[in-house]
Amino acid sequence: MPNCVVREWRNLILALGFFTRIPVPSVDNFQESDLNSASKYFPLVGWLIGAIAALVFWLSCQIFTQDIAIILSMIASIYATGAFHEDGLTDAVDGLGGGWEKEQVLTIMQDSRIGSYGAVAIILTLLLKYTALTHVAIWMVPLVLIAGHSVSRLCAVLVMATQSYVKSSGKAKPLATQLSKRDLFIALFLGLFPLVFFNSIYCFALGFVALVWAWFSLVISKRIGGYTGDCLGATQQLTEVAFYLGVLACKSI
Image 1: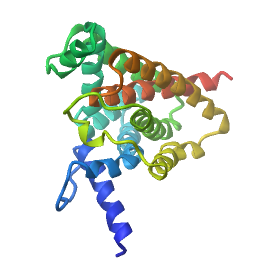
Image 2: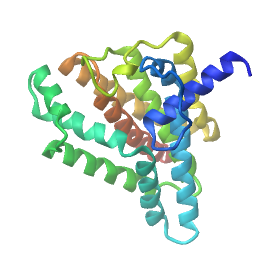
Image 3: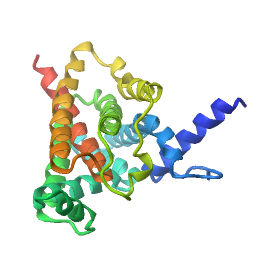
Image 4: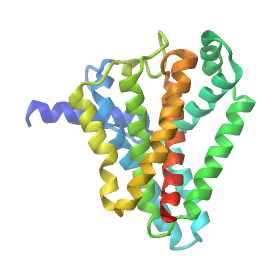
C-alpha cells in the first residue's frame, strides 16, 4: 500500500480516536503533533457521528414517533462522542460568562464543575436541537443530521485556521498549529459535501452558520485572544444548532 495512503489512514484513525469513543486500531509511534495532520478529517468524523444519529433515528421511527426518535438519535451522537463537545460548550460558557480577565476566564474553563452559565447553555442548546429537528420533515432528518455534524466540525477547524491556541497545555494543544492550504481545502470539501444532497435553497442555511461562527469567533478573540479546546467544542455545538435553525428558515423562503 502506498505510503501516502497509509499516512492518511493513520490520520483518519487518529481523528476518530481523539473525538469519538469508537474503538480504533492502535497507532504505532504516536506523537501528539500527529493530530495536526488529522484535523482535516474532523468533518469526516462528523459524517460518521451524523450517520450514527441518522441510523438510530430511522430505526426508532419504525417503532416510535418522530420526537422520540430525535431524542434517541441525540443520545446516540452524545454517547458516540462521550459528550466531548457538550462538555466544551459548558466549560467555555462558564468561563466567558463568569470571568472578566483572560486568566480568570481560562481558569474557570479548566474547572471540572459546571456553573449556572454552562448549565443554562447546554440545556437550551439541546432543547433547540430537539425542537428544530422535530419541525424538519421526517424524510429530511437523516440528511440534516449528517450535514449538521459535518458543517459544525468544519467550523471548529476554521477557528483553528484563523486563531491561535491560548493555553500552554490542554486537550486541544496537539492541534494548535495552523493548517496548510491543502489540509484546509480537504476540510472544506468534507465539511460541505453533504450539502450536495439538498435542494439548493437549503444552502442559505450556511448564512446562519456563518453568522454564529463569526460572532463566537469575535467573542473569544476579544475575551481571550484565541481559542481553547473548550472553545472548539462550543463552536461545534453552536454552529450545529445554527444549521438546524437555518434549514427551518429556508423552508419559508
